[in-house]
Image 1: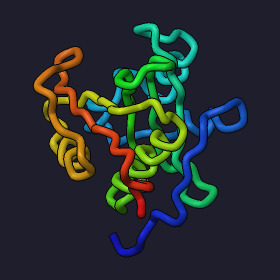
Image 2: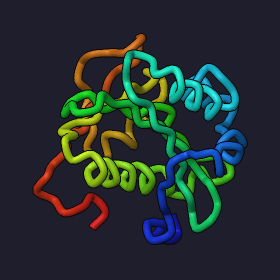
Image 3: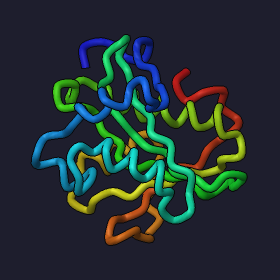
Image 4: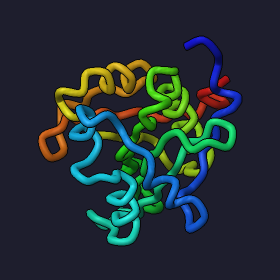
Length: 169
């Protein structure tokens, strides 16, 4: 990465104003099976926000580099819980991959969770067993494998530390 992207990355909820842009985001065809069975990926995430599988609240978010939407993720959680927080469909759009945005977006999202969901003590995600790049990314910021799986995918968990001011400083 030739420059520090932290200053220009922001996160915004996907709303009626930006949902169409989210539908244009995607990954390389060989990465698709790691993220979702449906194209566009955001269509599945938006459906989950409406349907609420597993009884969780699903909130889709987009990552922006300045004014350009460059990535996507979805938070699923049980309101008023401290342990039932999940990240789904985390990805960076194809043209922006390989530039360091993935790690910065993940750190930004974890910091956002700490600020917006003060009850959250841990956040989990499931990673396709063949997605070694994602596994390395998640462990590099503090996620650890739990030994459990979700639909055949290993679960990784991040324990939220309240003693740090933010993850990005």
